[in-house]
Length: 206
Image (cartoon, rainbow, N blue to C red):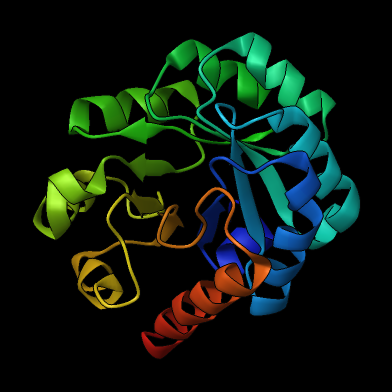
């Protein structure tokens, strides 16, 4: 078990480009749709402000954190804003170890078995296959075959409601969903429509 919210519904909403004044409304529609895990990439406008707004608004009802986390200093800033989840595009053992030392959940990005096992040795809670659209379901299946069975692998990149069953058949334990769910400036109504589609696709596969 990584986190009760993530274990119950392993779909991570990647809110790249989210602005602080949009955070509450977008968070609300995602929560209402059923999402329980929100990632604000640190290359978004004022990301720490958005993380703080979401963390305060949802408390322990949602798992809120940051993506594109590349340094130990960034981890400290995310923790200070109330974030509890650290997601990276890469697998830096120093970053992973610091996240775990701060008591945070850490999902680094990997693409090869070498990167995956290095990340696990550093203390990663789970792994993010990125970019998943390059590896494809076949690449994910091959990676899953050599990983410990209790290590969750999340596919990030190129996932949509229509192809989700293919990824799940290949062994994906969950997904990080970005532009197919939220685009900068997208209205809450648009995000709700996409969120409902992803939730329905997940539940149909159970």
